[in-house]
Image (cartoon, rainbow, N blue to C red; front, top):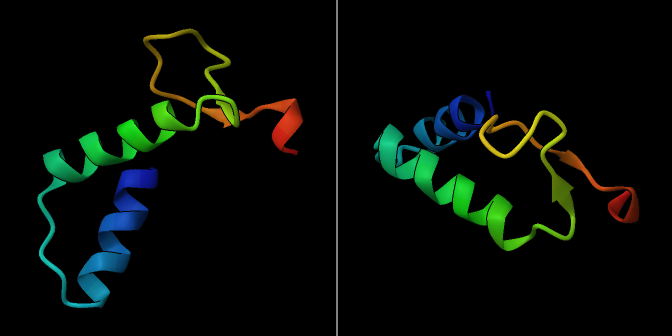
Length: 55
């Protein structure tokens, strides 16, 4: 869902969108800020939630 929303915003601004590149970049950002997010459904789920410390 996040990838789709970011892609839509980029398209509105006239920016080129490559979904696979965008998806990878978004996953990298979540991984980079792991202290702010966690995966409530396990490591392979690709679903994130805000950590208690970030709320």
